[in-house]
Length: 284
Image (cartoon, rainbow, N blue to C red; front, side):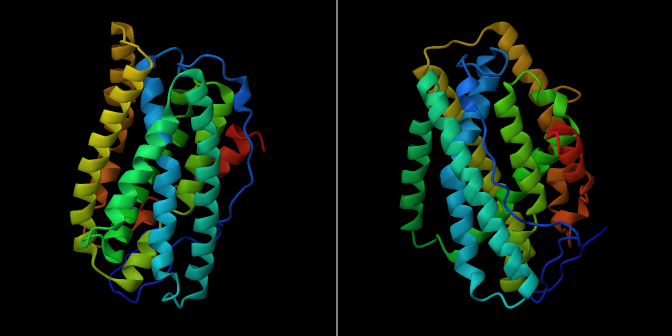
């Protein structure tokens, strides 16, 4: 399927059969005993801890940026998908808050970083340049990045095997719902603003800012945990990111696709990954 979005009048291009509805999930994080939950690798642990710390405030911002436009959307299908998007992102935020609290209690203070991002977002909202258009464009960019990372995880579930099962299940579930709603913010933006060149400019900015934030958060988590990574941990982290089956290696091209004229998130038609999760990864 190739979905072309070429005008501000465009509406939902999510494929038929993809239901954007929140699933009420619970994960027994109390089973986690080792603070370095990724097979004892401190770098991989703080990478996922840094990501998790950004989810509650980040997803609250995604919800708010879409809500700014919701009352202007007239397409009934897209309005229904916005409701599903808000429900899914709200539940992701709740579950990652729980995960962050568990990590904090084990010595990986993701909650401290979560509060840090909340403060930064409040300051951002006071800036004159933080228009509704910019905020939604940033959400669209971040949704693209999370969707291509989700696709990588679900295509290569073995990369999360070293994680404790409850954390693994959290990430698989989160990945599936990111794929389901990956086009909602995009379709709202194109319907209301219709400026795809602007989206491309904002993604460059978002990528730079997000990369710096995650790197700084990783350093902070290691410092607070009084942990200096060992050489084997550095090599493991490098393989995870840049190896032949590494995450950054494999998301490079899907990331670049965003800059193609007429790109739509469902140009990457990966509906089969939803079924894969239901049948193989979630035990459904």
